[in-house]
Image 1 (tube, rainbow, N blue to C red):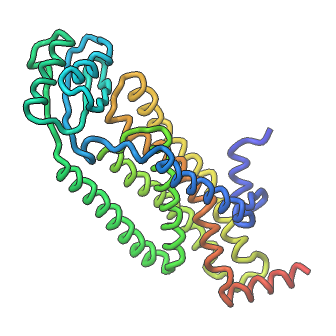
Image 2: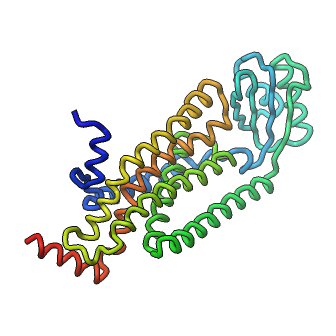
Image 3: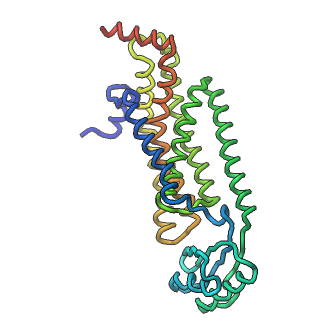
Length: 324
């Protein structure tokens, strides 16, 4: 039976090879379908589920609820404000977070007392606060600014490091793919988009960029004098680089995904840690998608952007003539 180590050695030497670059139209099609679905999902579902930090509103925190039914919170709020939409979330083992649209001061105090009465706790066990829409708009603006600054700096640094704007463009396309798909998953499952989730988005972009840089570093090494090669074309050299880094990319992804999965499924689902759930879903999906894009998208797109250069076409013709 062939061992994983042997497969890795064969991939690195070129004895075994997966044609990632040659089949790039398949990967483009899959990526395009996933991106379109990710764009359509928020429209079909009526938008994203933004957290209170972005949309503004009132929030109540109830401690020591003794694991009483969550429905009591909604009923208590409706005794004060009958028509308001109430979002109730369990936090940890015995705490409850209740969110509504922004209430007037009198309504907020009445709702706080109603919650204390419903759960039979002291008034001091229920804390109330509100976040105005201006604060939420400021958070949104800063998140978008942070993303744009990150992308600009990444583009410049990659263009300088690899001395090729086409590598930079390929990496940005892969990053955009990762971000859109991760946000699409949030729309599909209905998780709240909170500041913690935004931090997760930026983190997975960094991971995706890291994995892409590793692949591109090997691509640069393999294609340094590719125009003088008489045995392999530019596309074949790039494909070899992807195969040579394949095992490393998979191993890195597994090592990164396992602890994040434990946070997502154990910490968030079993322990009810909502904040952990917000950031861990972005990290979980983004790590997997980032690994996929660095292998199936970034390198093939780079070949697509460069294969029509005159010196590379001449080199490919020379390789084809030698094989005949």
